[in-house]
Image (cartoon, rainbow, N blue to C red; front, top):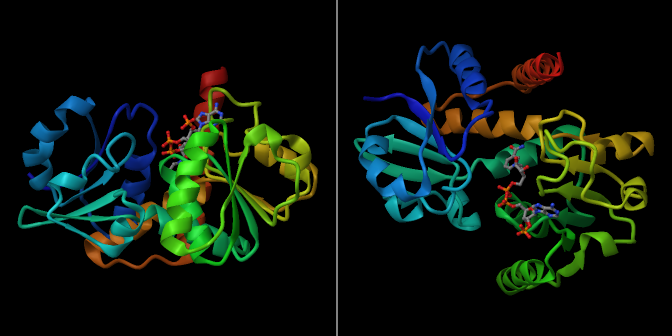
Length: 280
Ligand code: NAP
């Protein structure tokens, strides 16, 4: 069978096929990459098909659900308890997490330090990774959520694992400046643009803002940051870098930052075209 796929549900507007096909072209390969959506109760029955692939990526809701079916876990996946990339060799599946690579390469590209007061908005799958990585890099962490009990559960886990204190707040109660704000909620994502997860004055006092949403390219949160002169970055770089690191795992490929920058621009332009078509 062979080939590469993205599993998740639903997968309607995923940009992964376009990104991976461009990465295959940069590698000089002609592999195929396709979307493979199926409902959650069908995961177990799809495993034999997955074992016949060369590799696959994983998105909501399977990043944790896939764990019992894997034969081994890379340290990156074990650290966050979530897998977004699988390498298949002779039917054996090894899980990796490249979301973190995508995140850290984006921080590095923009000169955003995690060794500061960091506010992570959201405590779901990707928020958990941002929060753990921030603490590992020396951040003084605040987790901001709509449901305090979920934020407290993540804060407790991080405090116990890493021996640090973690603040928890509701999103609307935030009122202090942070060195870096990271949005890990879907608030502001297309088609519900025009809303921000954070009070505008908190954004305006931040040292830098990263929104992991990539559609639209400039969310309301990033618009608030731009208007206040706060340095900011959107989620497309993270999305493209996490895909590029999957190719490093699958084929040992190395991409130059300039190649990735071009691909980010290309994907943003594609998003803008799609938005234009939808408006027309
Ligand atoms: P998730 O596991 O569903 O977590 C979402 C988090 O956002 C939860 O803490 C949830 O709180 C919170 N939330 C949801 N709606 C909210 C609202 N209206 N107000 C306040 N908080 C709200 O999702 P995820 O996988 O972490 O993904 C989160 C976002 O990151 C998505 O937009 C996704 O597209 C983006 N993402 C981007 C990349 C990238 O490469 N750029 C990679 C992964 C994810 P509750 O628990 O209370 O519901």
